[in-house]
Length: 415
Ligand code: AMP
Image 1 (cartoon, protein in one colour):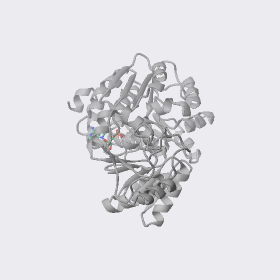
Image 2 (cartoon, rainbow, N blue to C red):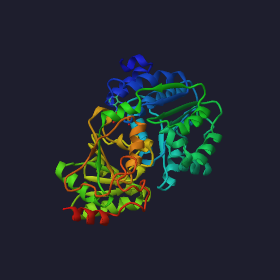
Image 3 (cartoon, rainbow, N blue to C red):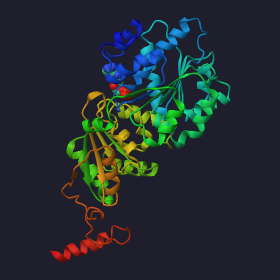
């Protein structure tokens, strides 16, 4: 189905084409007509499937229509909330790029924390048509009287489940209280875990539900590998994999900011161009690292989950879970950084005896078993957990298992 059949104006179809979007993706085909009708929408579609344009194109059209209908221009008509600064920049850039190709350009402002508020306040002088923001900075701007939310006709929550979970609860409540009660609400994500179901139900009014493809099917498109390795050998294994496979761009996920710094440092000292990426870096540094990584100037970026949502790196070939993610939902988003827009991708997870049970939970949720592999020279010395086999007879209780030294002694005794 071509874009023209979805109800978009010829000008926007032209703009989409100029932007490189010749035909709509399935999520765009499903969502665009509904958004244009003014419906509330809860849309679930795979990572990298074109969700941004699915709301961006009809949003631009609706804001344009409001401006043409004689409404005062630059009254903030649409608010797009996103959980990370990088995603805000990316969504803002998509909106602006499309806008460049339409006759009556709209004013789009990106508002994120971690950088001075003053330039954003200046940008907002005289109003804006669409604001793309992270929740905290949006509230700061409201507190500074730099913008008002009273005219927002459409609210978009991109990565909605992340915005609706506990970390953003207070900020989101405050924002919702500032918005007009009657408005269009759009929730987009690749995942809607059961915990946020009630919250989406409460937010959305008679929503149209779009489920493009179960995330499990998408995950199946990404080649998933699980390598058994003891925690202490992971850095050496990662280095070997990078060198052996000649990977030019690898996104490695770890559990903490410290771990990101340490691992990037170790790799760097081992001759691999690696940089850390996490929430404690300055915003300027974060942007630089991401831009350099996208331009393939960094070979490896070692990141926390701040990089797991939404970020679009074209043709990123490999994602590595050096530390496993906390939840199956995070796993979906992390591995979704590769294999985007139909490209091939590989996601590798390091699994140890201690994390085997957790990885099985992840497999169960996505209904896919990932065969365990061992790499010569990196075979784990720790035994498998109790539920697979319980050679120690300890029931897998921590502290009761044989230590690595014990096992080495045993092995040496046998030979
Ligand atoms: P998103 O899921 O919005 O992050 O999009 C994933 C990737 O698909 C981005 O690189 C987009 O530029 C690209 N994309 C989105 N929609 C289309 C389309 N209709 N045709 C071609 N590429 C698209």
